[in-house]
Length: 97
Image (cartoon, rainbow, N blue to C red; front, side):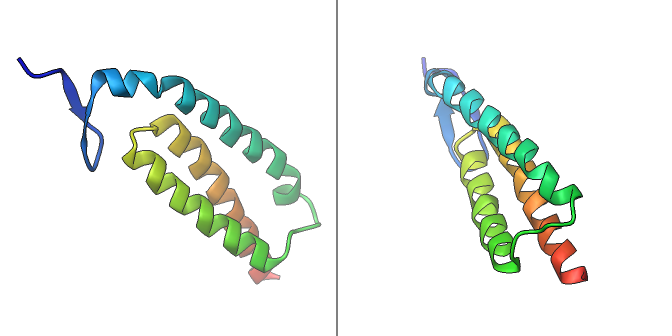
């Protein structure tokens, strides 16, 4: 009988393998939300990072979201996705000036 498995977007992963990545998913999720909290003062305040910093960081984090989601690290993908959106909003605020 084949092992229980589930579909995670791009590939089939054994449940056992997925369970081994739970602590990593939680750790990266906490870090992602931590970065989002740390970014709130910039998002809400007058002082903004440079446009290039916003674009590069937003782009890299967006790529990370795709990678995490395809690995089945959904909690991490959501947390880092929120942080990526915040960087894109910072860029929009800079362009809007």
